[in-house]
Image (tube, rainbow, N blue to C red):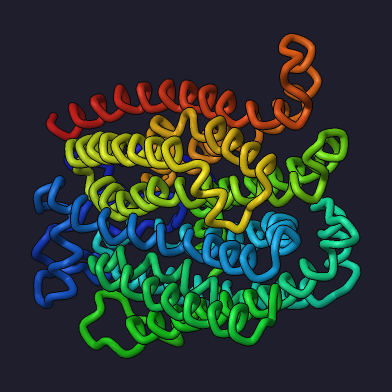
Length: 517
């Protein structure tokens, strides 16, 4: 996969025949109201086409507001699944239920990483192809995403029910003997419903790219409401514990999946349709989908690796502290749920910007690309500040809400929450900045920036901080020191992203001069 700058529109070498490579934006933008010799161009002949074409002409602040509000709300809904599971389990089962969720969490994140690898990659490709006027290629991307999801669902289901793989994953996640049986049941149920997550989460983003962000929000809201109802029924009323929580999550995904499929199969005026002939796998297109989706995969996979290492360190240093290993897992599990929930609106902002950035970059509208990026960064920063204030003010009530009652454990949980969120006002810049490169067909840069936060900086700090901090600040033990790793890693990754974004602004100004000339 190579990254190429698009040729200026007046370049005499620009081809007029279809581009043979599917790995970079085609070099010539289509006329907005006429046919394109490279494929079936979008024309303002229907309400569905108008929704797509306006991404290149309508007011950017208005478009961002229209796309971002449902996207942010949708990601908050998506993040609420884990919150709901933990709240119900914390009150119905106690700390052991929270510990089981903490052990299962990195494995669940791996599955989400696969869903985003396929879904976000296909969505990024579809947005670029729509910007180039190649609707048929965008529909092929949609069909291939569904086919790839079906294949991966079979693989995940097999791994989830194969005892050797499940035991290996639980060992990797540092499951204690008391927690292991509960976590095993939860993982097996989640694996069985993986295809529902792939379509309900990954394919849902295509609805947003079709210019219908409110409908994309609605499909996610259906799943959340269903999950709440099923959690109450299975966990509280029927007392099914961790198994009931897993069933409720899968059924919630199923409701979202049904709504997404109805949009692409049953809605006559949808700009993109799920067609059986377009579901035939195309290796070159699938390679492009994977390349474009790899940054999103790295975000989640990196998070999973961090969670595996963090669980190991929690068990190790928790056993040496008054908190204890199981309670350390329960406490940091709560902090992780809140952290993931707080990051979701920032991820939602980056997802909302993706079709706008991709469409305008594919159409060579550089000024709109720059403006969209900076508006998005500004809004993400405001969201981060609001999240920072909320968690700093309500750390203790948050601990109580998850069923943590022991005074010492509540105090430790609040301390962990305060530290983990020190840099969140600036994390939005890092997330939106790295996602920009994914949306504009520059996955290598996006992958690197994603890895800085999760892998390159955080992983070494998880090992170094417990060894170093207690020697210079004896009031902190090894378990306390683990909590300082995240804000330090956030600072370093934000600084690195700033360097990349600054250089990209120089490159875009140069491209703008070429197009104007």
